[in-house]
Length: 145
Image (cartoon, rainbow, N blue to C red):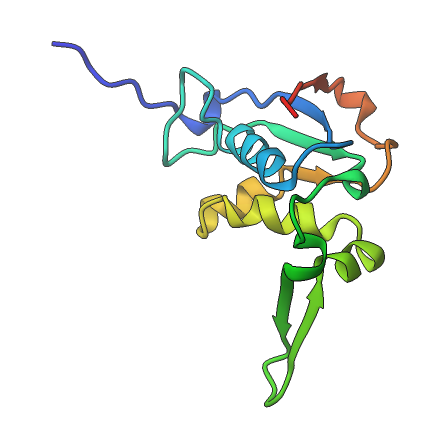
């Protein structure tokens, strides 16, 4: 009788990956990053253990959106007061906060639980190609455009 392998959090080894977002479509980039953060590509994947890897995304300000999404895609937030809904187009968000679109796209694909919060802390997004994580020796991860 074969037993199912369940990874223990003490035995998990987290790797570091760098993804260059220059010219990549937002959704395709986000699915790859979310999969790495969850650890879905590992043989030892266990749903209730954070077995994912650290992901550093560079050049987030140079992503692509297809169609008219730069004008039509809206980002909403609410201040929790009456009439406090604020809406911005993707173009306005990119001009003011160049990393926010990538961050929100990846965060939306992770579980909305305590485990998902641990995974969110393993994501680092930068608008340009400079990052302070060179000491961790991250491996470049190629994403198909």
